[in-house]
Length: 193
Image (tube, rainbow, N blue to C red; front, side):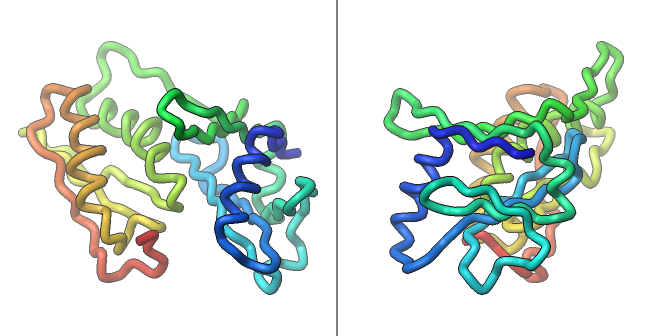
């Protein structure tokens, strides 16, 4: 079953206390489990939002509800939290089942871009319930990405693209000339903003 370390429980408790609600818990689910495209969805769960088939983990000051369909995929997964030197912190989800394909020296430009999107970019946006998909890599080095989940329609998507994702891809893969967003942000149903 899912393990939530004491450090992570303390972090969640502090985060939840800031919400100033009478009653609150968390809910977790997973998309694309055990692959490079895995995303972990962690949301606030108000009393009327719990589902009858959710599994529950008692974390002393709150309950972590786990989506029934996701529960089997979260077996042996650990959520941890470490404080950083700058006074912030980092939430770390360790999944021993995650399938990570190492790239060979002969990997194509598209394979290298997809690898970075899957392993690093999606880790950056997963905390906001977001997902980034590689749509195309042209022969002249133009990368087209689309945003989904909490990133589709988010007011900060352009900043995330320009200051985070684009910079990461340009720094790591010199053949890339530009990174553009091809998302229909008006169709976003649950933006993070």
